[in-house]
Amino acid sequence: MSRTPAAPKRFDPELIRRGLATRHFGKPFYSFNELTSTNDLASELARGGASEGTAILAETQTKGRGRSGRKWVSQEGKSLTFSIVLWPNLSQDRFSELTLMAAVGVARALERKGFSPTIKWPNDLLLSGRKVCGILTETGPRKDKMISAILGIGLNCSQTTKDFPLELRGTATSLRIQNKGRNPSQAAMLREIFLRLEESYQWVREGKFHRVLTEWRKRSALSGKQVKVALQGRSFYAQVLDVDERGALLVRTDVGTIERLTVGDVETLRLKPPKI
Ligand code: BTN
Image 1 (cartoon, rainbow, N blue to C red):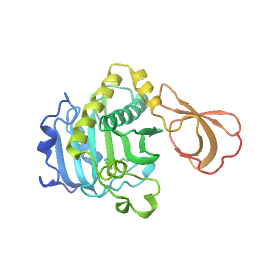
Image 2 (image 1 turned 120 degrees about the horizontal axis):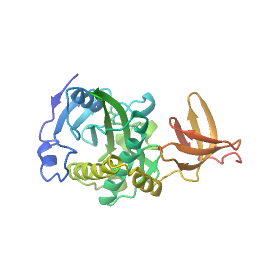
Image 3 (image 1 turned 90 degrees about the horizontal axis):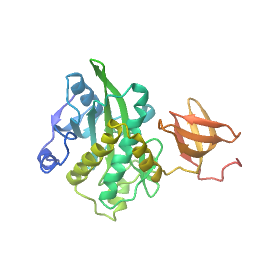
């Protein structure tokens, strides 16, 4: 694994540490120029006993990954690309709670900085309908009876449209594009994210997942929408109804059955959908 500490000029970790008002998130905080994936190093550190909230940031990743085995590319110096080690004390069947809580935490942080994000199930954050942030929650190593979770977040900050590969230009955006050329400092943004994530994580820890769900539903980009669902090699049209208390998406299919989705991809229909 390649690990070059970040040159202070570009991303000074001191700027993050200074004035970070969290109890655990971002403490400690490590920053690198290049990693395979911040999730890889976070997992390795968790195996070595890294404490809850340990955060790892990289300017670039050589093997950045997204959901469903997709690649994730971060443009150097223009994204916030980081992972956080969690020891949530949850059984693995409740890890989906972390997925939704992460989306809520980042959404609330963006709102504090003047943006109006929506959440596309399970945890893509959209601005004006385009993806600005992706979140990947992975099961990490075990220690005694505890299972760690690795929360990986990629937020597009200062890209212009031209920075995105052609195939993403129609669907991706950045804080800078949405904020008419200006964007909050990456350090301030990251501190806010750590703070809001810690808050929503605390709700999960205290057994108050209903608070996460309420906040998630308020921002849902898909409620009531006609969508195309891609699921394990098959696809079908459906209408989105809700998320349930486990974070699964409830949809009514075009043949009238209710499906509960825990994996899969959902795409909003641009063309006129078939009658449901
Ligand atoms: C997705 O939208 O499919 C999730 C993307 C998650 C990307 C982040 S960037 C930091 C962390 N390291 C990775 O390799 N992936 C996550």
